[in-house]
Image (cartoon, rainbow over all chains, first blue to last red; front, side, top):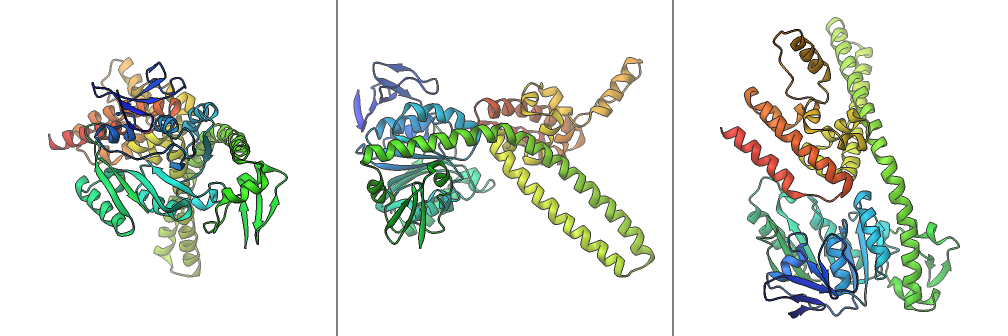
Length: 210
Length: 260
């Protein structure tokens, strides 16, 4: 087993785990202090399995947009074990499940809020080192940029999961991705970007620096 | 500039600590990004980093828990009320348009102009109701909304009566919701030994994937769509996460039928 990112391990059979003292959150296997990370359920796991790395130190302040029921968030909370994650989710239903996670983990601050209106939580979230965004909205890029403007420290990084069909449901996904990459690279330094196949169809990630 | 933060207000570097943290937490909205790091001011109020986050987390959980509970209870009733309002307004507009036609055929005058204005303002109202339905449905039922559209999703919910009832319906029932009258008529005819046509679709008929197919294929599409809606509703109710494969499957089936 090899540690590829802080607290993230890949076994020789290409399964991925995070070191965790907590139990199962979404049905994943837990054994001897490690939680299995299912790449089909989590885009961040898929990205790491494809060989991409993010250099987390573990004490970052992170803003997480689109936490849903907390599948990926639970693993990110294992990674950022000495930091703080502000988890934003708009829908009440998944938040029920998310709250279970939040109550278990001391490093997550929950926010039931609309990520497209960052001003509504501008007096709650501090300046952060990292923004993670996974929301399938046609204006997800604008949403990201607004949150960057409000909260990201200078030199901070972000990781965004882009879903082609939610941005433009008729255009060729590759065209959509090119468009998004081009518009982001005007304002930010793109560090890495790739598709998330075969784990997630018509999705790419973009890792960039402000 | 007075900045509203979760533990109070900050003005000219002066901090005024809120007496009710839940209240200030929920009102911590500012039009522009804070020109300072909130955390540094927080350390002046709370003894240390640990205490700052402990308090913030406690307030955030308490506030969120209450909001989640309230929203879940309220939103499906709200969506149902909105659908009812939508249908009433639609009917009113149609009625007024009919009368307007009658009137304008006879005479074109001031009254006719007033009529037109009234209709226009009602149409504006209709748009606002539709937008609200869209917002609410995306929130409480993202998967059904994704595959069926917010209007159909809301209408299904309204006909079912509540979210709990909707998820207990079989796909075959979802397929004909809104066409009960012709279904029961057909069934009654069949009981008497006569031939009858059973309806293929109810409110889901307005879905573009059904409407745009030739008649002979609409039944197949309606059956498939209803089956996926039934699954989507259950995911929405129990899990609430978006399942991307569902829409993909519906779209594929549509393309298949269209090409055949």
